[in-house]
Image (cartoon, rainbow, N blue to C red; front, side, top):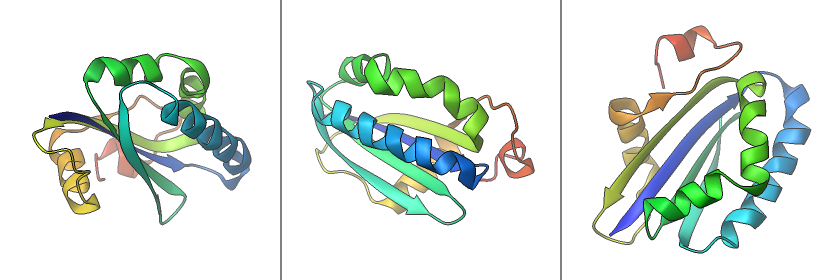
Length: 128
């Protein structure tokens, strides 16, 4: 059994792309060096939208990653950089990463919206 964590982030301006990509690099280095990380994927979608998926041995390992280092440092910036942001977590029996169709469906049905400084109408309507 593994724990899956997914985020969807849409940058509200291209001005945030350089610092965002730097933090993607730093967070990627951090995640691959975190005990309990089983694998992950990144999807670059239309309109400056980025999806991350990580698989963990257990939820506690994901929380250690989330609450430390580069990832912890970037979390407050997401509130200003993004106009859409959401996440979802779940446990699954097999160790394979799900496909993006399943991820999208779970985000719609089970996901949570992130509090943002400048949410788009799409975010407020929960249209993922």
